[in-house]
Image (cartoon, rainbow, N blue to C red; front, top):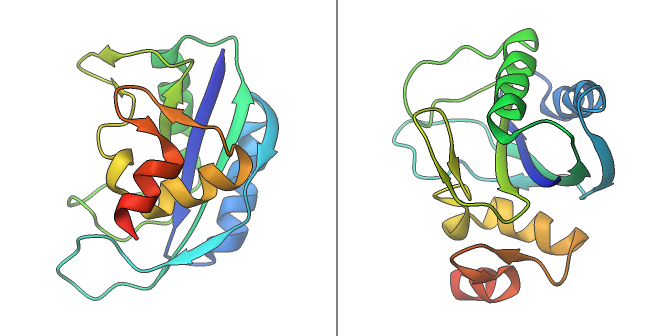
Length: 149
Protein backbone atom coordinates (compact mmCIF):
# COMPACT_ATOMS: atom_id res chain seq x y z
CA UNK A 1 0.00 0.00 0.00
CA UNK A 2 1.20 3.52 -0.84
CA UNK A 3 1.62 5.69 2.23
CA UNK A 4 2.42 9.36 2.79
CA UNK A 5 4.03 10.14 6.15
CA UNK A 6 4.79 13.57 7.60
CA UNK A 7 7.71 14.02 9.99
CA UNK A 8 8.42 16.93 12.31
CA UNK A 9 10.54 17.87 15.31
CA UNK A 10 11.42 21.03 17.22
CA UNK A 11 13.21 19.86 20.37
CA UNK A 12 16.79 18.65 20.72
CA UNK A 13 18.47 18.19 17.34
CA UNK A 14 15.47 18.15 14.96
CA UNK A 15 17.38 17.37 11.74
CA UNK A 16 19.23 14.48 13.36
CA UNK A 17 15.99 13.19 14.87
CA UNK A 18 14.25 13.25 11.48
CA UNK A 19 17.19 11.35 9.97
CA UNK A 20 17.01 8.77 12.76
CA UNK A 21 13.25 8.44 12.34
CA UNK A 22 13.71 7.88 8.60
CA UNK A 23 16.18 5.08 9.31
CA UNK A 24 13.74 3.44 11.71
CA UNK A 25 10.89 3.86 9.21
CA UNK A 26 12.97 1.88 6.71
CA UNK A 27 12.39 -1.12 9.00
CA UNK A 28 8.62 -1.03 8.35
CA UNK A 29 8.18 0.60 4.93
CA UNK A 30 10.02 0.77 1.63
CA UNK A 31 10.76 4.48 1.26
CA UNK A 32 10.48 5.68 -2.33
CA UNK A 33 11.11 9.41 -1.96
CA UNK A 34 11.82 11.93 0.81
CA UNK A 35 11.24 15.67 0.58
CA UNK A 36 13.73 18.33 1.53
CA UNK A 37 13.71 19.41 5.15
CA UNK A 38 11.70 22.59 5.75
CA UNK A 39 12.08 24.94 8.70
CA UNK A 40 8.67 26.19 9.80
CA UNK A 41 7.17 28.22 12.59
CA UNK A 42 5.08 26.34 15.18
CA UNK A 43 1.47 25.99 14.05
CA UNK A 44 -1.36 27.31 16.24
CA UNK A 45 0.46 27.29 19.56
CA UNK A 46 0.07 29.73 22.40
CA UNK A 47 3.51 29.35 23.98
CA UNK A 48 6.93 30.19 22.59
CA UNK A 49 8.47 27.20 20.86
CA UNK A 50 11.48 26.68 18.62
CA UNK A 51 10.88 26.38 14.89
CA UNK A 52 10.14 22.93 13.49
CA UNK A 53 11.99 20.93 10.91
CA UNK A 54 9.43 19.13 8.72
CA UNK A 55 9.54 16.65 5.86
CA UNK A 56 7.24 14.24 4.04
CA UNK A 57 8.06 10.85 2.60
CA UNK A 58 6.23 8.44 0.34
CA UNK A 59 6.67 4.71 0.59
CA UNK A 60 5.13 1.28 0.28
CA UNK A 61 4.07 -0.97 3.13
CA UNK A 62 2.42 -4.33 3.57
CA UNK A 63 1.18 -3.33 7.02
CA UNK A 64 -2.46 -2.50 7.58
CA UNK A 65 -3.03 1.20 8.38
CA UNK A 66 -3.65 0.70 12.11
CA UNK A 67 -0.59 -1.55 12.43
CA UNK A 68 1.51 1.06 10.65
CA UNK A 69 0.22 3.70 13.09
CA UNK A 70 1.29 1.48 16.01
CA UNK A 71 4.75 1.21 14.46
CA UNK A 72 4.97 5.01 14.09
CA UNK A 73 3.98 5.49 17.73
CA UNK A 74 6.62 2.93 18.76
CA UNK A 75 9.29 4.78 16.76
CA UNK A 76 8.25 8.06 18.39
CA UNK A 77 8.54 6.47 21.83
CA UNK A 78 11.95 4.96 21.05
CA UNK A 79 13.14 8.40 19.91
CA UNK A 80 12.06 10.02 23.18
CA UNK A 81 8.64 11.49 22.35
CA UNK A 82 6.78 12.46 25.49
CA UNK A 83 3.12 13.26 24.95
CA UNK A 84 1.76 16.14 27.01
CA UNK A 85 -0.58 18.83 25.73
CA UNK A 86 -2.01 19.32 22.26
CA UNK A 87 0.51 21.01 19.92
CA UNK A 88 3.27 20.79 22.54
CA UNK A 89 6.88 20.97 21.37
CA UNK A 90 8.18 17.52 20.47
CA UNK A 91 11.35 15.59 19.80
CA UNK A 92 9.65 13.72 16.94
CA UNK A 93 6.21 13.55 15.36
CA UNK A 94 5.22 10.98 12.74
CA UNK A 95 1.81 11.16 11.09
CA UNK A 96 0.17 9.09 8.39
CA UNK A 97 -1.26 11.67 6.00
CA UNK A 98 -2.57 9.28 3.35
CA UNK A 99 -2.81 5.50 3.14
CA UNK A 100 -3.65 4.37 -0.40
CA UNK A 101 -6.40 7.03 -0.55
CA UNK A 102 -8.43 5.19 2.08
CA UNK A 103 -10.91 6.83 4.42
CA UNK A 104 -10.66 5.42 7.95
CA UNK A 105 -12.42 6.67 11.07
CA UNK A 106 -11.54 4.39 13.96
CA UNK A 107 -10.79 4.94 17.61
CA UNK A 108 -7.04 4.89 16.88
CA UNK A 109 -6.77 6.39 13.43
CA UNK A 110 -8.42 8.95 11.15
CA UNK A 111 -7.43 9.01 7.48
CA UNK A 112 -6.73 10.99 5.55
CA UNK A 113 -5.11 13.05 8.30
CA UNK A 114 -7.96 15.35 9.39
CA UNK A 115 -5.91 18.57 9.43
CA UNK A 116 -3.42 17.98 6.61
CA UNK A 117 -5.39 20.23 4.23
CA UNK A 118 -4.62 23.30 6.39
CA UNK A 119 -0.96 22.62 7.11
CA UNK A 120 1.51 24.24 4.76
CA UNK A 121 4.31 22.30 6.51
CA UNK A 122 2.70 19.07 5.21
CA UNK A 123 1.45 20.24 1.82
CA UNK A 124 4.64 22.00 0.65
CA UNK A 125 7.03 19.05 1.15
CA UNK A 126 4.41 16.62 -0.19
CA UNK A 127 3.96 18.70 -3.34
CA UNK A 128 7.74 18.81 -3.79
CA UNK A 129 7.94 15.01 -4.09
CA UNK A 130 4.57 14.40 -5.78
CA UNK A 131 3.40 17.34 -7.95
CA UNK A 132 0.15 15.50 -8.79
CA UNK A 133 -0.68 14.59 -5.18
CA UNK A 134 -4.32 14.36 -4.16
CA UNK A 135 -5.63 14.46 -0.59
CA UNK A 136 -8.67 12.21 -0.51
CA UNK A 137 -11.81 14.23 0.17
CA UNK A 138 -10.01 17.57 -0.23
CA UNK A 139 -8.53 17.61 -3.73
CA UNK A 140 -5.24 18.50 -5.36
CA UNK A 141 -2.46 19.29 -2.90
CA UNK A 142 -1.22 22.12 -5.16
CA UNK A 143 -4.63 23.80 -4.95
CA UNK A 144 -4.86 23.29 -1.18
CA UNK A 145 -1.42 24.82 -0.77
CA UNK A 146 -2.24 27.74 -3.07
CA UNK A 147 -5.29 28.51 -0.92
CA UNK A 148 -3.03 28.85 2.16
CA UNK A 149 -0.30 31.10 0.75
